[in-house]
Image (tube, rainbow, N blue to C red):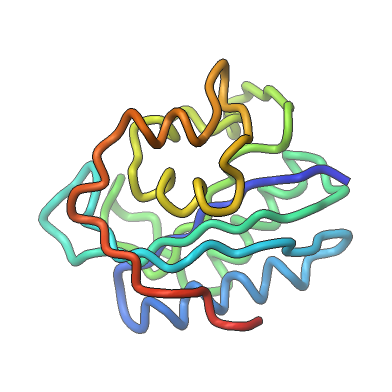
Length: 163
């Protein structure tokens, strides 16, 4: 079993419910268990800033799935929930990102692990710091990366709802 970090985000519709639906779908995956969920954070948009604020959270899961198998299932969850990929960094009903899988380093056309933008994204580091502070991303821990970025504009809304 591999400890894995997954990021969740939504800025359309019932954002909190979309995060909960995604987490429940992840919990239902074969040989996969959610060990911990971060708080839910309201965060400003990143990349494309003229859109509604996001709700973001991270999950720490344990899985026996391979990185590519897990990615495929995550993309299916997004599709089943109605995710449309029309605009890079644009508004979305749900976004599910595979952030890391312990010490796996993967570089393919479809997947890079650890996620290449973790260190730039406060909306990932704030919730990830709660559930995996000592996880190494490259040569630095999540905790160290979080200390090096501004959390300005992020608001911690409270605990993740029970699954």
